[in-house]
Amino acid sequence: MFDNLSERLERSFKILKGEGKITEINVAETLKDVRRALLDADVNYKVAKTFTDTVKEKALGQNVLTAVKPSQLMVKIVHDELTKLMGGDTVEVELKNRPAVILMSGLQGSGKTTFSGKLARMYKAKKNRKPLLVACDVYRPAAIEQLKVLGQQIEVPVYSEPDSKDPVQIALHAIQEAKARSYDLVIVDTAGRLAVDEQMMNEIEAIKKAITPDATLFVVDAMTGQDAVNTAREFNERLDFTGVVLTKLDGDTRGGAALSIRTVVSKPILFVGTGEKMDAVDQFHPSRMADRILGMGDIVSLVERAQEQYNEEEARKLQRKIQKNQFDFDDFLSQIHQIKKMGNLKELASMIPGVGKAIKDIDIDDNAFKSIEAIIYSMTPQERKHPEILNGSRRTRIAKGSGTNIQEVNRLLKQFEQTRKMMKMVTGSKMAGMMQRMKK
Image (cartoon, rainbow, N blue to C red; front, side):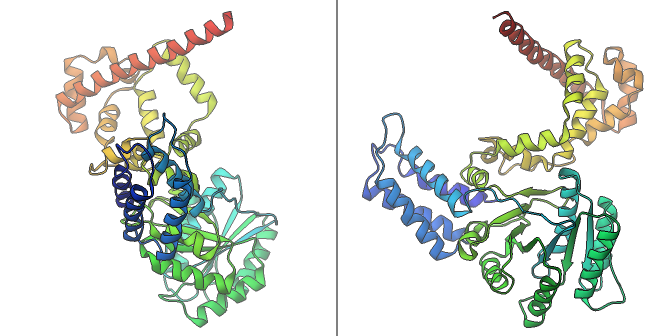
């Protein structure tokens, strides 16, 4: 995501390296390259020009402090303007009614049905909501079945009327069903077309008028570039939607739609789809996205994902075990499972400042833990609890049972022991620090 844009911007800032101050000449050269980078990333031409004009105006008005290099100041100005370009503040979806209703709109193939499922799962898991999915796509033969399959995966019920061809009535009946069964959130998936047409727009306008949703979301495939911006404009003129959802940001996308869409339609980007799994959805944070584009990582999102998987009581138990040197392979396995739940490994690593660029061309397999898990699962419960009893014959048996070799088993045991020592040192130093503070 945005890899090419990040590289081009970094190259642009290098023009200012070694310069003592920002001048009309060197800033013009830098921003010419920045504008070219934005256009190559499929950013709308007017948006790119306005952006670079604003950056130039602000850069020339700045006094460069002795401790700050011109290139660093330029990065700061570009970061602030990128954040503004994408909306500035993070926008929350307001759901006031009971049940609250979210209407999904967008073209066919944008990922609308899948995202409806992801949204239902997110509100159920993170917001403690009781959602109901509604199948209002009465044209695409597999649409209802697809939504039902997704509903089963995330354990969310799906309301459908397979024999009805009236999406307005289906939506109204679904809301009645939600009220009767105490569902507090209704997510209505609607039909899409391969292109914007009058029939589709009339139909979704009629649905919106009938159900008066709390929020209308426009779902767009980020890989469609400037077409996404044009389609968003057309939908907004007819629907006056609440905000935008960008799907497939994990794909081979240049990212220009994300940078243009907010300015062109004056509506916020609310959510982004970051992968195929049902939990691969994030709230959109303009500042954090600017961090990623400029290669600064996104440590806040990484911490938030970790917090979703760990609870304080489990963390305290683990800390006590580490302090007593009782951290075993069952705990090790549990930590691997927690990491896997956080999402795609390469995406997680790219959130660490400075790491994204280093691993750009490295293929990090999501099955990287498979052999480690196989080795641990081939151990007996006693061996997992007490790794010190793993002698040569036991290791040979584990290697055969896991489909690995003795070298891999030995390597894992060595890494495990090093991890255990490091964890004890870290927790020990924390405890020592706390004791010192208590004495004061």
